Image 1: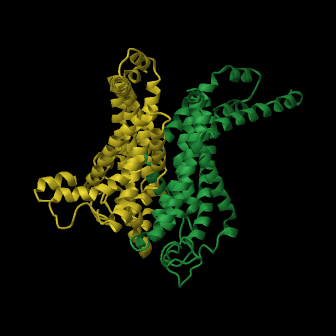
Image 2: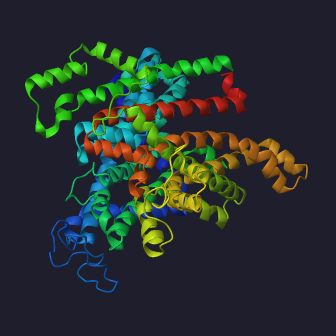
Image 3: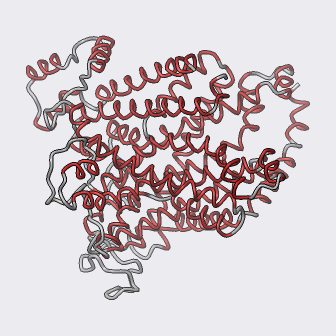
Length: 303
Length: 335
């Protein structure tokens, strides 16, 4: 059966999918904010990828004669250090560029882990119902009973501070949202005719879950993934700020803020500039998320 | 209603067990056993080690330890702080009012500004005022609030010298806490200027903690309003020739506010997470700062019970919100 049908079955979906993408892009590109967000995000990705080559200085090299140099436009600025230097003479611009790598990496890793975990748990819960559903969803309730940052903080205390552990902890606390969304979507899809017909055609549980049902639940998951991407960056920066995320001298943006807190009254730029980087990144991703939600949600589209 | 309440309470039981299990295992999965963790780098002799393990009940089988833990909790015994040697519950309640005061002020500010902003945006949908409000809301929603706090300190405290940098009240005012709420206590003390001083210290932390809830409430109010404004009964009201202002205020707002009330209630988790950062930035002596200090001091019994107490509070508030929601919206009750 498989041999004769696979070719015709796999070929047609390409076009509808492309058409679907084109439609999403059509609505997405109508939102000015979303397009600006996407442009900023792409620029950030490029900076992050090229950071080792385009950064003017080594992000952890300390210019011992250049402590707390102000930005170039302020009196006392040095043209070699556009955004100035921090308390131990490291170039802030170079640290920001390298920091972009960490923030985007954190977002990508956290979203991947929590998306995959959440989809699997949500599919299991929504597809099998009964005790599997009850067990999985009660565990999700427990995770959601804690404020996410507090739970992440406590998890990091257990497994030790550091960038990777922070990512694991954040992924765990963000994951229930994906599980709940997937479960809800799966439950509403499972009783549709196309699922029944696939089941009658002899599709196994795994195929039903991943090939038949999942592709039809993707829209809310994509939006949630975008929003989680920005939450992950914010939470990681917060953990870094509290001293439990990335450890110095890693130029993670939250850690940079934590390092400079004591110079708050003397050198405004060591605090202000890394925060602007966090804000712009998170804002651009949230703009994309809003745009995607409007483009993917047929209810809003019509209105 | 009673049936709904009982059903809702029954749902809480597994969550309660789960939350206590998380707190229970937190101490037990830390690297090294609890006694070594408490002793730190000084180390401890094997005899003393065994003795303390026995004292803390760590030599019993796991299920019995958990049972004892639950019994202790129901008796109100949340362990003893390793650093201060005082009961954790006492420490918790001596700091709790500071966090509640800050959170109440923040949620008040967020509602006071967020609901009108959302209505304004919805009524002027697509116009510049909508775009400006929603743009600002998205910036607020994307804000790293710990940085926002530092920024406000730089500007209002460092540059303008308008507001203090940290603390709850100026040091020259001293009175015994009665309620723990500085605004009320300063009034009760009758000292001149004490209330103004407390208010002064409260402004920046409130603004910082309110930022994200404000953005969420504004966005939620706008979308709830838009949904309601498209309903038939609103169209009917307009068709009857009622003035637009009256339609918005009487017909639309009342119904739009139902989901908004839920949103406001659900901000309590956001507020607790925000309190950790806000209190750290402003040295506000509340639960959030206490948790961070305890993590840094490795005062793990405090972290364990703080985690549990905060989760229990959030569960309680969510329960209250659900019940209130069921009271306003009968459809939920009869599901």
